[in-house]
Length: 204
Image (cartoon, rainbow, N blue to C red; front, side, top):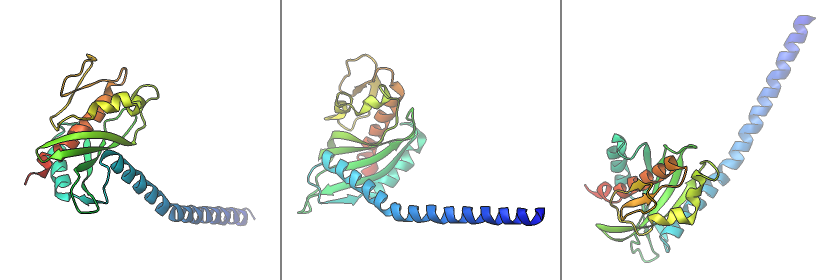
């Protein structure tokens, strides 16, 4: 009798687990595509904010691959260039570049952002940055989303940037956020990696 009860219990647990797994799998299958579409829409919205007027975004796969290979030396920390794209308007005219980059050195985890550029080849300037993923400490690292911090990158050239705590950033410097130097470094290194991708990454 005890054996029969144990078998019955095991079968019941198996069926519950099986049904739960099937339901979860079904939910994942149903939500996977809408989530992917929402993420894509958010990415394109960031692109449009940084370099308006893009009708298409041509991937620069060679630049992405070269930048990642070169930056494996850790000069800008643990970063990954996710994609380099060239936005073009409806007439096929190039509008600049946009780089999707992730720093894995954030205080609260990965920081993913896009960086926009316009201008002539060899004289590109940053149009700004837009965060896709940011999970830093509230009131500290999350202040990276504030215009006061983000606007520091606007108009910068592709020269490597450094972080300063002086509060009086120079031409190639970024003022650190109070109490959030790790986040400041991670964001600035991500921008430096993007700068590299649209300069040295384009060579060869």
